Length: 246
Figure 1 (cartoon, rainbow, N blue to C red):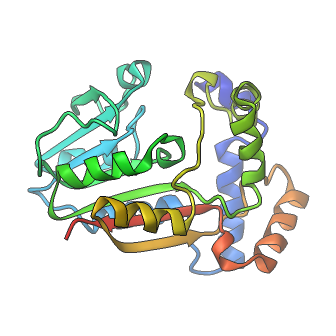
Figure 2: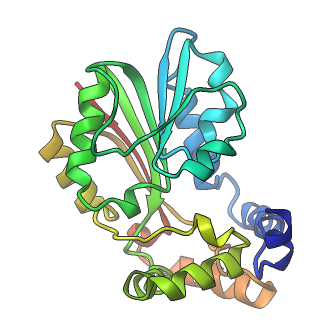
């Protein structure tokens, strides 16, 4: 909502401006969103069938749904589906643990900011494998629980009411879009374990650093950049994954 964004402590426009500063410091750096779009596009062709799992109001699939044979979105939140930005793209109410599709329906399943909410990740991973065709990919983006910033998210997990108030205030989201988090598929080790248990294989799994998530001013940005330099590589804020049904 525009009004919520205006009240945000860290609006997206400011965050993106600091990302440009970070690119100047680290030439070649790409945000997790940029890397995600490249990864997704590497797996689609004109005849592809694509599922946006946990589509909400839209995401990377809305950028390419007209370029493929079939694209569909699925989400449990009816208000989000009613406001989906890709008018004309079919969207369905449902959950990842029980996908309402026949076996081997899709060449690609994409999931943004969903894994952190799953109660039983293996159930969803198995369903994804079932609806993927052999050679199909499951591409996802989710927070990395190794990152120190996730301490605040752990507090949110323990105090969901506090999370629902603070996260919208900080990033300008509608409070209704802030959902409970569980973080049961949010480390490299957990993703690999869930992939093995569900019959998927890891095709690509990256930890992506991004020091702009607390960059409310230059001091916080510089402090975050310094923190990134001393933290282990595996502590980047995001996990970008690509699993394959072989």
